[in-house]
Length: 113
Image (cartoon, rainbow, N blue to C red; front, side, top):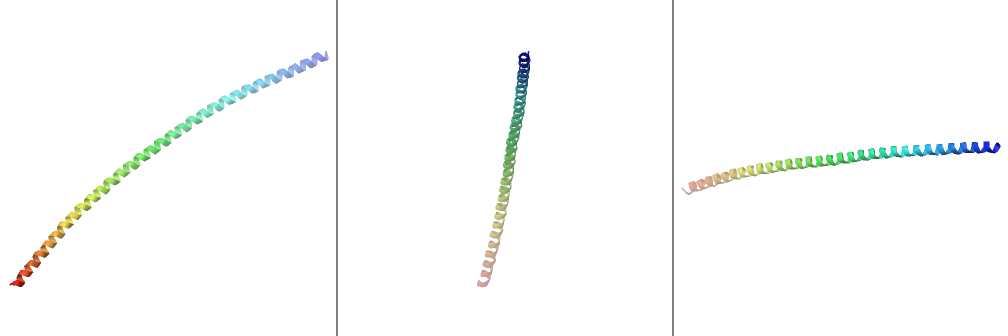
């Protein structure tokens, strides 16, 4: 009878260990599935962050391009204004030289008489 009792106790321990191992395996499987879901969510978050970064870089590039075009337009306008002013000053200088030449000619004519 002792042997039967010992076998029954051993069988109970064996079944208990088997059930415990099965529960541990199930818990490990659940933990693995949760970890997989978390990794998928993290991957999606990283993908979204990367897309946002790409969009921000594109927008910054477009803003820089627009600012460059505006600066180029301003430089072009300033150059045109400077050229117009230089032409105007050239005309004024030409007129002044002509007046001076006329005055000198007049003075020379008066000295000859």
